[in-house]
Length: 313
Length: 286
Image 1: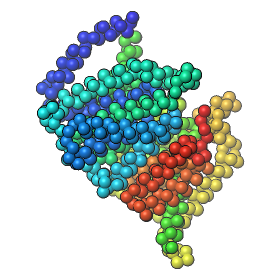
Image 2: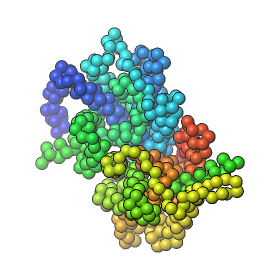
Image 3: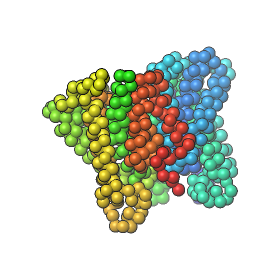
Image 4: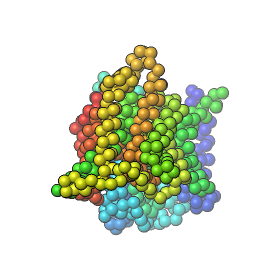
């Protein structure tokens, strides 16, 4: 009853937000349009990670692996002369998903802190390859000069075009995740989070559900990796690094893992904060560290829960 | 032949350094289920502080005392002021320690700059000796010796003393330990401090041959992670064996296949994960 009331009261927000999102490129400078693109891409990444963190209760510390693998695939495909976006996206998601399918075999047998350790180590394997195998990956110089493609005859090179495009992809992923997580599959995942033994007793193949969740999380992370490569125009080992994985987790925690859009809100706050801080101080790495500590110490239940508490008081 | 002897000794000394770092990491993980991402930061902090002490006093031993005690103090502060509040919340703890990686790393960059340094060796161990027909730096032999002494010391501490028994009991069943009237928070802080201390000693010992530079913190951490996964989490024996394995494989990998040297240590790790997910000496979790 109460949630229905709140839902009705916040319903008017949807057209307002939609209108703002559509008008944004004509309201602000290209710098901020670029930031908005970053928010959309990292939101996809954080939402994909939240399949594992929020729904299955498996906090992956190596989610950058699928993001980075897809970004590298995009780079290699571009350099191989494949310019068709849909081909690149399909192959990028395929390779990212395949990586997740492989790593998932090793990681989903662990749980809790050990699961984090294993996922971290597996992602670092790829980081190591990207960093050291200079003749293949370009080492820490990465692969530069990747240009954005044309889609349906529209050149995505201008920020405003790419903004609308990544916004649409974001909405598609949002819809796909909504369907996935509200399906019987999604309910089973949350059942596993609450009690693995009970789900086993009910006859669910718990491991298979965990494995599938791991795979889907990697698949959607790959989507964001492809977009990110097109956004920055190059790919480097940083895209596979622990920084990206940890940032995703921070976004999930900050936005709250309980709702579909929570991680997206977390992404918005972190991306804006990072760019703001790095604009006015050289010590942005120090500040970023403090942001991690502050978020965990004061916001570890998520922003939305704080709003809820304020409303109740 | 000379190549193999030198590389074997290099591998052995690197293994001992790895053990110092991995032992602290695995103790902390085994007892508190905390993945201390900042473990390498303690290494780096101690090495930089040691550098400053060496420049001022030329005294290696003093550098080790100052560096490792500072690392231990930082570890205890981190645990009792921050991590303690998130007992068994692995995700929150990991991200907190990750925040400290940025904080400590950037503070070091601020104070000591971005240039790589190499910690001067202690005056006594600057020379080389002839082993048969091979010249070998005495410092590396000293590292092997220190590593073995500390390994034996840790083993005696864990197996033969009352405090070691408390820690072992905590790894197995931390609730029973509370029931026995032991102040578990003191034990936790103590072990966290010990782990950081060992990483700090590692920073001083490793400073002369691995160098001190921004980014060394995460490289060291990753080596510890691989060692611990191979050897089994929470086990000193596992950390020792894992260190020997990684130390040798990494050393020979770098010498024989430089381009894929990362892969040579990660590939065995993946194989072990596939065969025995808890590592060679790890216990099966319920």
